[in-house]
Image 1: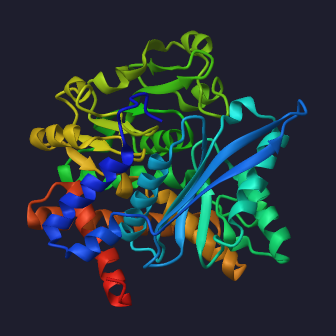
Image 2: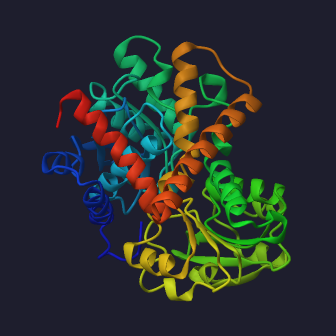
Length: 429
């Protein structure tokens, strides 16, 4: 979550929607319907802890819209989770599935907890308790969860097992992000990060830039960031720094190596949550800088791949004049105030719900494979992902050029129009 307690992601999501609703001249009923989640579930999960005591955890699931298909969206475990964050993310998921044109809606879930402080057994109890509260309200044809911040394939498998025990059958299409051997899809781990870079590759073509002559600065070093760095480096690009959250000090640091990040060596000094060991990184030749120093680097591409509200009115002025592309691997990293500055400066924006849609697209592929009990090879998955992401990027870029729109606005126009049309055709609005 953002350290700025005054930041409300749901209000930001609504303001983004309102702007496009005006542009599309949406009627009032459709506006009211689409700016409010269809359903919300708030519940408690009592867990007997390893010390014998009982702790009660707060859980949420928000189903924003399902006009185009079953809800789709991750489940976060985070100590600063809020219902407004979950609401915003569920709305963004609706637009994300629509902009890449897959037949799903938007949902999101969360539990207020910190997995760093919980044993595997305690985490399993939270997962099973989460599903028991929602067993009648999620499913392969209703709402399909997935991993998100601080959740993983093991958490998803515990949730699937609980759902199948309650319903007395096998329902692998309930949830995505499962282990590959138990209904998961090859390529799912790489999908979000690779998807970001597929869109960066296409943006570089639009701008007439050779990837081999570009550099990037990345916020975060979790799954999305690591695989984005991997594919970007395969294209010949140079990543000069990454940032990482230090759990013990409850702050973040930027790790810079001007001649380029050595991905495998840095992975070797990183924990499973993406936390980089400061001392060992220094031994590898990295400069250790303040957490927001990644924003200030003289690079061609900024890739925020951590949490929301990172490029805002206070930080946007630190962005180097050299930056040509901001590719949003994270959800909601750029506030409307910062967006206005980037737009004025002519920075090419690849908005979050387009740039990071590789994850949900591959989740959709996993869902399809699970439902038909037939699984594709890695090359087929990544090839289909590339086609889907490239097509979505050019849909947005073409509209942006034709209508003289900012990329974010063009992506919203496509997504919101598709969802509003589905609601209208169903007779809902």
